[in-house]
Length: 285
View 1 (tube, one colour):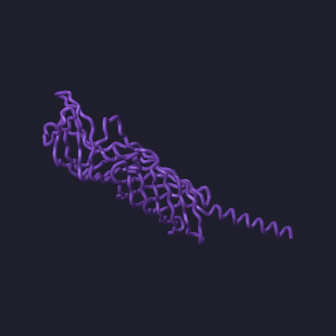
View 2 (tube, one colour):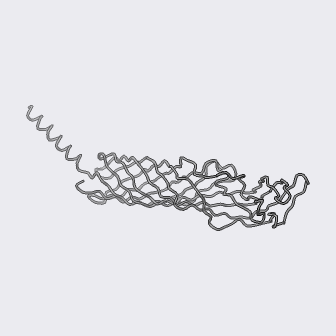
View 3 (tube, helix red, strand yellow):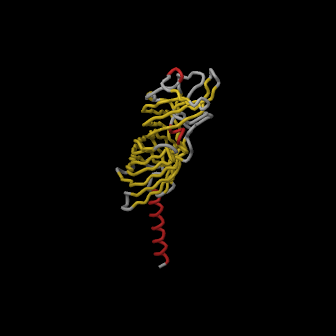
């Protein structure tokens, strides 16, 4: 009886050991994805809106066992967002350089729209768990962090604005004097303008199903979610946060700020969508 028990236990251990080795520890993959994204959270003026997002890249997973793996890689991701502001009415203090008089520079706009687009090189570090429910097909869940390095960041604005100069000491408001920076229905610059952002740190999650395609290949289908943890905005030491800025040295040449940097308490990527990952294990490894 003892010999039979020992034989059975030995057989079970042998089979278990063989099964534990019957998987590839090294998995390489190519992925694509897309969905919706945004940038602004907690805007003080206006509303933020979601736009399209796309991602593609290469990945690598090292399997600790048949359930758990650690993954990394490099992705090229595009995040887009926008802000719309109705009935914009702001002001900042300015100085007339010729007279040294301080006045209120008034800016108004019936409608302002701004779109931001950031192309980033994203480097993920993910922990993944998978559960096989029919022998080969498996549910998977991944959680981790991504570093998003800005490669190209631009914004585009649309709308028209009017500026005036109110002198409290004289109780006079000047308008329609372009040589002094006071214009009417002047269009915002519509060309794509560079925007400086910091490197993003994002929490990232994926959830879906892993489908077998062959002995060493498979396809992951699922959903993903990226949430920016840090503020990317570089506001600098600007004197004010209005969309249009009076320049004392060159009054006809007005300067511009972005709504994203001026009126967002936090500017960070936020995206959700679907993802496809084609994976290939290394046989015998």
